[in-house]
Length: 116
Length: 113
Image 1 (tube, rainbow over the protein chains, first blue to last red):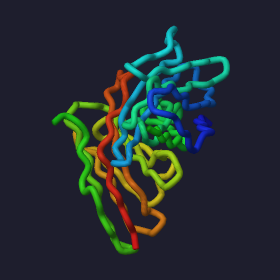
Image 2: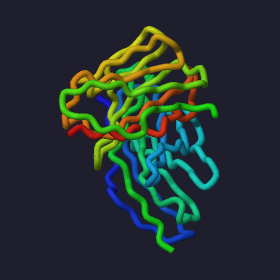
Image 3: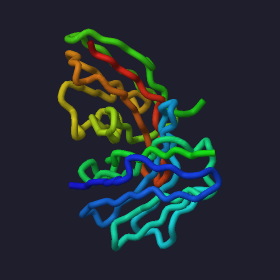
């Protein structure tokens, strides 16, 4: 079965510094997609970044980048120049093979707190 | 505004009551899914749909029913509410060929007493 593991329940970072949130995954699916979502205290789920298993380059979206190491089955999120508004829960997710890749499986999340 | 609309935002039910959580999207997305989020956990898949008339179970389907009579709507029914169903419920959608993120609704916070 597929599994997403986020081993950091909580992280602290100083404003303007970079931070890496860890995500490892386990799948037998040769074609898969990995997502990162942000959930602020208001509760909504905000899509940040996507990496396909066959993508040759690491995904980037503004201050977000994904450090994709396929052989190690890791897809860490890097946030550069942290801002106070980055304080939130962050979830790593993967398309589920058992749903024909139509739905997602999530990790347990990492709570990031940005300190001034 | 285009997106996924969930209603209600908050609901309190008594044990044994039934209710329907509504989910509607106006993006013509084929795939829709329901998740629940419990404290300290990620989202878990309840049911999903790949198109009108086609639904299937996720990892925690017990106590829930779904139907998809139109592309736009994907309601989630609680048949006989139990305290274990106290959770935050999210509906999400994506187009079939999408490599972009699923669009999530704003969630329904359900408490069963």
